[in-house]
Length: 373
Image (cartoon, rainbow, N blue to C red; front, side, top):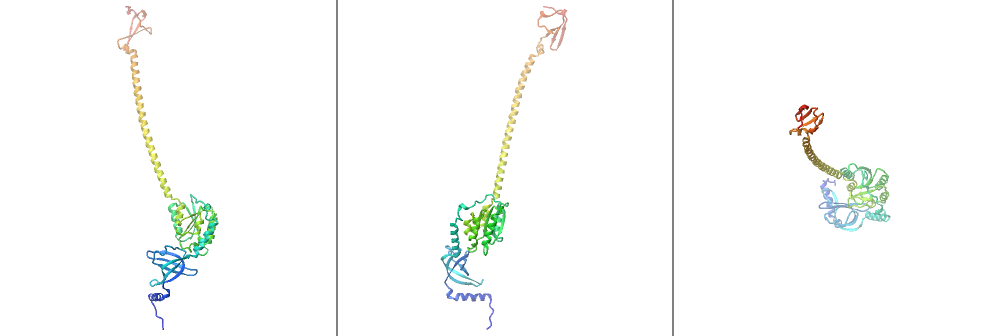
């Protein structure tokens, strides 16, 4: 019998009917490790995996992951559902129970315990983060949002800070070797002030390169201060404990290492404004004092001049009183003979002429005209 041609909808409907009709697939339990959790308003999407396979899961129970996280090994109960419109198979979970920690998480705990006992996490080994950072070495993927976020924060806060990118893989094969080598190379690069090891969030498997002993020991041996900025704020990796400082996100690392020059500019403008106000105040006060001093000087000079004018008037009056002509004006006359003043009648020499001085002129008297009375 020839095969009939099916539409996509007919094909997907047929597959869904097969899954729905198979009783053995209903209300079954599956064990696996959780990864790739994402949430929407109505559903939680995630995957379960073991050593070789993975399945997509969905749950419409919002509280189902209150006690679980990435890397948890759980047992879920539910049934497969084939979505006709999208042609996708999902396992619809209606119950989840803790089975035990996932293998990756157990490896993480073992490595953390080992390195902690060796002292790689000790606070005494932490290098201080420099205050005046001129160049930041960033170890991350050359693609993606991480480097864009760091550039954006630095350019906004302090454009004078240089960003030196050392591109590496951030997950997958050889990622840990590339990250460790980048740390070792930048460790001895003089122009680098501080190193930031960064990547975006992801599952524990995605972040596994940062949980390796190779990367941890390279970080511990680095000569430069290192800030780890791996994953989201809730993600923790081994490098977070070994590094000198952990930033919750790459953007936060950029914030920590750059001083906001706009604040410094505002402070400078405020100081300049305050300085100008003080200068204006001092100038006003000096001008007022100068004006007061000028007025006092003019006042004192006027008083001094009046005093001197009064003294001069007294002297003038005194001089006028001492002027011989002033006496003559009162009806007196001055008698001289032979150039000498004669103030007594007995001193007159009859043989010589007399000069009689009035205030308005002189009269000469002949000797024969002079008689003693």
